[in-house]
Length: 378
Image (cartoon, rainbow, N blue to C red; front, side, top):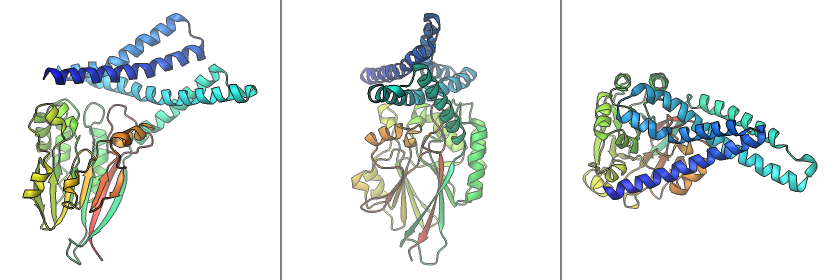
């Protein structure tokens, strides 16, 4: 336990230091570009310190059940985080351009104040676009043909949501927009690939009632994501139950005599010393099926021993980075691209996610609801 706490503390310190450094780069650009005096610069540094600590403050407020500070802190702190990320990359790019012109074409050198204003204006414009885009999930349609459905049988329609992160930022209004699109799609069943919840128990119960009112004919199924463990696995499971989801935790189920669903827990539970069911070998030993088999797994990693035992794996977790260019960094840890990828046998589909975590914006990684139409071959 002590070793795990040390690892968590070290990781938090490293991430907070990197985040603070990115913000301080912005402070330096503002100081040079706007010719700020020391009092104004010191004020900005104080703001950076507060924003760097804001995720920790939000976590402490959540642990103490202080809902209103959590909501206010999340909107301010995470919106600023998105702006800081965007400004860092944009300002750095402008700096490289300015250096090039200084060396190669001095007559076209960009003054520091103009470079800062251009970078700040572009950051605000992209952030506004990202904020609006985060509220507009796209419908991604995928048709898969399989000989495992009887010839002439109707298509089986499966809707997939992932990484909704219901909580302080993604609330009733966003959820109603998602449900409105799902009602139009009329899926036979609904799947959540983890991280459905990310908020305080007791403050999102009304969202469970909204989800419970949506009832596809074959039901709703879900697996745990890492945030289900972060908010408290017992409370997260209770939310899913109230929302009408059947949890697949190292288990499988037959659907309509045409489909087998199988699901495993996110491995985060093991690191938090919680009962976690991730053994795919045991899962498929007890749920081998001649039907079309769909594996639900939060993180987009493929267990090579499972290839050939499922027809389609659906995953989320990565958000496609959520804010460009973080999608490029995500690929270092999760090399499978978002969207549909063919395996040696079967497919894997990686969702960009339906909601947002942290900054309430998406840039270059639009949210999605995925609808799979499984149809007979030929």
